[in-house]
Length: 260
Image (cartoon, rainbow, N blue to C red; front, side):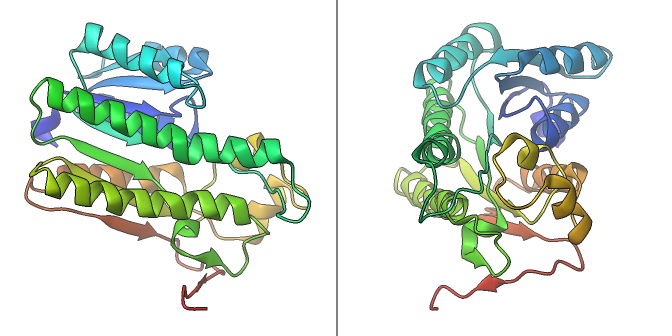
């Protein structure tokens, strides 16, 4: 990780959970981190606590469902930090919205955050990397184990799974585009299983509570995902970690093969 010291990372959804944990760890590693989120007050609090760390945490207000917010955020990053070296697409949302009678607004929000917001941020990050001559940049998508099929015990999170399967396809598509462009920018998809965060409290759950979900299943902590992010960023420049799945020992559900 030493080669990233002093360089710039963008982390979306950095006001809580995995995103905040990643942002804090990157600051401890000496990076300048632009923390993007709607709840900017939380990032400001975290920034104040990290004042004596080697790096810096810069709170940037951004709703990734609004393209203009994203463009404004990247414009600020260019003006104040110089550009992007690492893009961590962590922002995500889940609603338990059934396909036969779900709310269109829930579906749209999941697609806006999990797919379109991620794609716009990625586009702007790569543009930034190219503009200031970064040849070893890295894009990391925080995907989900649900992005590689459909969990047997999915709690009917089918639209969420569809959005995360899209992230899987987008990761491979971006990798191929970068190869065709003879780019050394790397892209990685990290797919956790169940992680104890606020995501289920923020989302709309129909027939299960966040408390029930975590009491009935073994789960990961945000720190476990931070370790994976640090690992993929720290691999040699010639190593491409395309996708990795992270499950806790004892996970009950399994994936339905795509052929079924």
